[in-house]
Image (tube, rainbow, N blue to C red; front, top):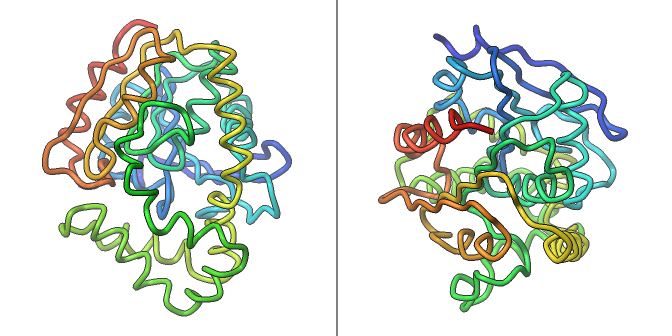
Length: 283
């Protein structure tokens, strides 16, 4: 079925802001959390199949896409509260949660703090701040853009007027040169064009110290009891699995070969081959 005919978008009030959420289908809920530089449409190639058996809920993260350009609240705890508020607003007591990149830390924190809301958890292509297990990945230092994005006011000043080239670099690199569909490419570029849009995007990085503390405290206080799947590709590989293994009771790890960072757009069929049976499993 054509994606746009099966999905409607609405704005919902959560945690003091308005969030844009794409919703469609029926059945057990699946909450999809995107990363940078994405909108909910990073899931475009997998949503049609998920709609066959699930109610799909795919928000634009705080400050990104068509969601409100919030002044603050970009730390992981607030993003997790946003996610829980979306479930509340849509009348879903629980959901399977699938996240990539910047969506991973709030999904992880939600599952730790509110385990009754997360039936199953799928995390891909990200790291969980300072949690142990990813030392090899960080041996050469974090990715270069982490520092660039964290300096207050710098990146948006440098990039204003050059957003298409910058976002395009991440989309090409994140698919190992294969690129993304043109309509999705254009959607992403529009979503990150303008100083305020860039400010919101980089605010996620600038909240890293608070987010790191929140992740450490939550991981020290509780464990993931629900089934968890870690999916890696290039460049994160199995680093996320390494961080999850000490805190997850039921963890499965997978690596997708010849796949870039943006797994849902680069290798959607391979991703669905992992997601479909995992999401169909018992709660």
